[in-house]
Length: 317
View 1 (cartoon, rainbow, N blue to C red):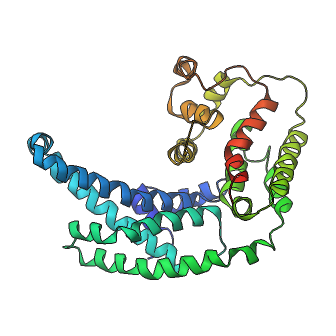
View 2: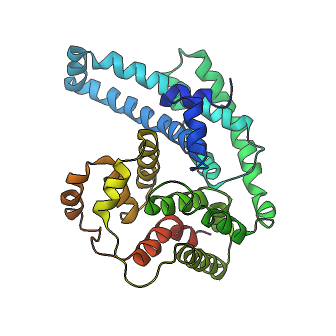
View 3: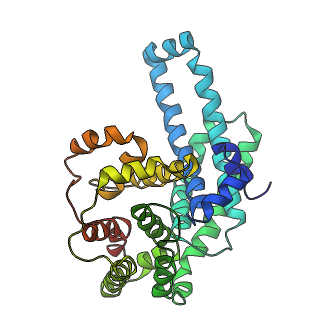
């Protein structure tokens, strides 16, 4: 099985399309794998809920009438097996460089390891699944070793070099500038820079790097004064992008929303709404979201979205 097979099969995307996305979104592979691995826990919960509903009779009876029961079971079976395949594939590659997404995958897979016995009760008929779950023991040990020794590796990371590299891409990604900022911040948050932010113990150093990043973005884009951010134009620009790019932006923004622990994002939510709704509907929908401001400058946008991607990492450790 090649590096792309799991992702291309489950997400119905070609290897060529995946390579195209990777040119801009450096950690889209890991994000898709994370989505699969996390999905194992979600479908396991769905199966447990179905079992509970069986006692009530209503939902299961409706499923049997509509034919949804078999469809749902087949989908759960596929997702669980593919999810474990993804964990196993990531395990095989565990010696490659570490990113923040790797750490997230490790955390989710660790939770799967803890619940493997419960999962196997439902899937004892799948010999392949049993083998994959057995690999989680090896996965758990290698992942712990990998991240226990991470601080020595992180000493070699030059945070500003990562910032300079990503900021240099601005105005060259062939995307609306608001989405280019979104993209480079996601690359920083998901990669080695994000991992450095998590493990760096000195808050002052983190604050300095965030300030440096914001300043470099402003300098690159020559942002001065009170030029206002036009979310209606942004929506039109997003909806004029290629469908594959729209799908990637939607996936990335919604994944951040899913893993948000408390409160709501503002700019990431705005982008998610813009990419999932027609331009003539966006204004009304955003007006109904009390946490999203409709009047802000580009300077505000840079401050807010940078804090959303990287601010929570300032509080880690």
